[in-house]
Length: 230
Image 1 (spheres, rainbow, N blue to C red):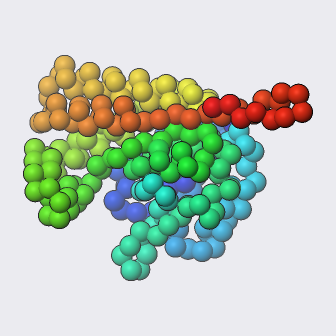
Image 2: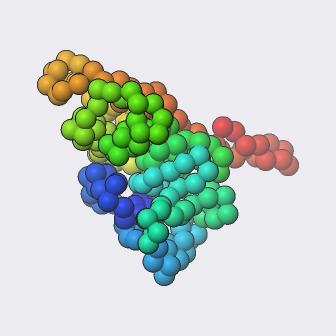
């Protein structure tokens, strides 16, 4: 089995992802990096370890992201600091990366060959309030803090189930199991009708599942030239 890594910067807004990290910890040949990434010595140790990984390693990132970066921990200034961007991505560029982060699909498409990425993920009620205050006052008008909490549980439950079922064998198997587990959660919500606003939560899961992407590239030697297949 390939080496399995999880990078999970300390940030109280992503604590709800802890069950994913805990499930990954049960996998063979696992190494976890859960720390305050503003600690320069620990961050250096992380990058040193990443450079030593074989290209078939699977790297999970749990946290916040944007189209041009993946974030680390919040600094003393109250802002999220950049952990990965185009200046330092070489250490994971050729690895198999699973980005459990907002807009990781765009980031990975630009910088990482083999990856699973996501689109927008509304994972914190503060994001809903911010959009209502500075953007659309009717943004997710149905949603309360409890609804976002219930969404978090469904989202994390689907990813955790997928890790169990796939055993993180390959990037393709992880992707297939995530798709399956999201679909099962959506179906259960619509059939059971137990959660408040279950249909809206099911719609959120559907959009995330629909926007999730898989990119895999292989190198094929043809004559004296190398062809990149994706």
